[in-house]
Image (cartoon, helix red, strand yellow):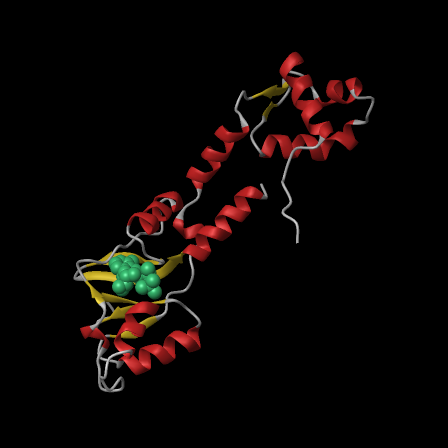
Length: 211
Ligand code: ADP
């Protein structure tokens, strides 16, 4: 498979140049300069407007926003919120065994489990390596409770639905972890309402690259 680079077409580049030199300019006039019909040009104009290269004002026409591709990318990146890319969290109760947690991790096909107490509030996090580490000892895994091996509160890195995805990505790197619970603060703690992983960040990255 080859990696495909998403670029503006030659015609779109030309349109930007025309608008840069002549803007504000109507769609009709741009079409005239290119010897095309207004209808043929419509998809290109809407792509360029949606991508932020051009702006359109009613009865005035198109004008160049003056923003570079990198500037637009940064602006779009900063608009992405956690809620746009969240996944369903997989929760386990704190009194279950390491054996059960391993089974849940396989059955639910996730790399991180969030541990909750009897009030469904977040108390811990379990990663693949936490479970592997517990498994190479001599302990009986069905008798070993997860709350002995989990990373516990208050050392859990969390986020909320309205946080910026880019800030979550930075946290994943800084803390060297794979996932963050998305929480909603409640009276006595935090309720887990979602999950953000490196996969979600990769999906956002791809969507951004595809415009
Ligand atoms: P793995 O241990 O499988 O490489 P991680 O890098 O996600 O997976 O986890 C590294 C350590 O950090 C583990 O001990 C795990 O319990 C802990 N951890 C994972 N996610 C979080 C989080 N959101 N907050 C605090 N600690 C976490």
